[in-house]
Image 1: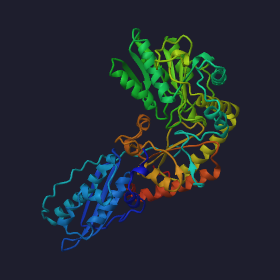
Image 2: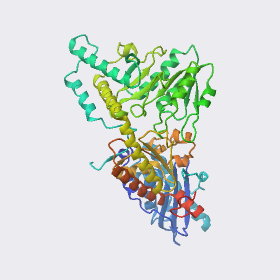
Image 3: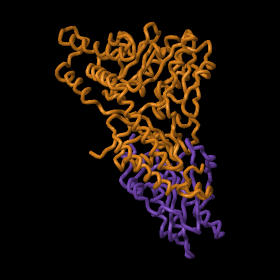
Image 4: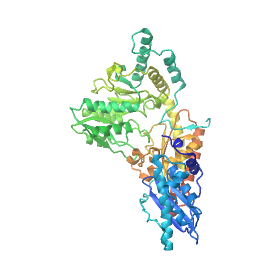
Length: 153
Length: 402
């Protein structure tokens, strides 16, 4: 099956020109979700101001086209939102904003939701606050592999 | 699309113009059913017989030992299920390898559900089956050994002559899936101790939808399709005259230029491997560097994922392939890359480039440079790469440090 024909134009746009790639130094909250073994890892950085508004969001993602596109869309959707409103950026919201995902890629949008939640959880822990409906993140990142011997090196 | 660079020749190849020309008369002019009684069809049947002789001669087989099928997967299914069924009384054990094409692996899994026992031999880090390990796996109940001639993902050429010899010393039938090798390396069914061999026309500039199973005379194998006398009564169905004649023309071409083409492809392949490994740090070349198909270059780029790589290559007009899980719709990356011992996360970043005589040095250079940029871009987005750089303090271009 060809990925190119399965992805919506919006997915291809956010994959080809991802928004908000990078890191935020001294971020208010950072969350990493996913599993290298399964081929997807998302790390989300949130900059949240004193009014508890998400001023900036950035991401780094290891994964397929859908993983990169959902990360990009998720950062776009949380920017400018209060931390309570950021909780409304669910996997469904990310998928809808991308005009849908192929069935085998739906887990990428779940990962994007989890990445937002993990970053918010980190923030809530640091600030010692409770965000309604926010659960502790499940961190299932495998230990990254040991150094791999390169041929000829 | 004039800028398109096609480097996925293990997936399929362009039909050679000579092949197309050989096929064309069999659609609107010589359209008769080769099995019909009248002279109009008799001529076509003769041409099909000549095609069969050409192809048989190419691998040192007899005309009577070539059975045309609809392709490589069908041939693999037939060889394994056909022998399993015919020799059911003799035994229920089959030996194959962990790196076979799914047409072999899934057929074996099917048989496992029906009372057969299958040994999946491991391979070493370069993808080789150990003939000694194979001998050790043989049981009194073993009826079939199936080992591919060359691997479709990493290009490793297996020591099949030796494996066939071992099989025969124990009185066991030997099948080889030669779909990637047929027409690309010399094959002689007698010298290589082969009892059954699967091949497919579209991997050697022939048409899609036609393949063959070579079956050595005297081999016990159940018939595949019932309902007609075609293919000596073993595989019913109207003869695909155009496809078979195209297949034979592709074989004629391959036979006439195999040495020249493989030398040229190998020079492109080695240039590609050299450029990519020199320009892109943390790159692994999969498979053996010597016993390798001349057109196969298989890489893993650490810290990135294969589907993203393919999509960006596609945007640059480059057709390639990956053993990444995300290109197959499953969570696990290629069984071949896992079998050669790559960690999951490394196997996710795989790329297969398979060349043809139509590729050029300029294309190789463009692909290597485009790859360098894409890998750099994806790594700049990768949390795995960020973690690796901060942990190792190697910096962005730490070549040779690990």
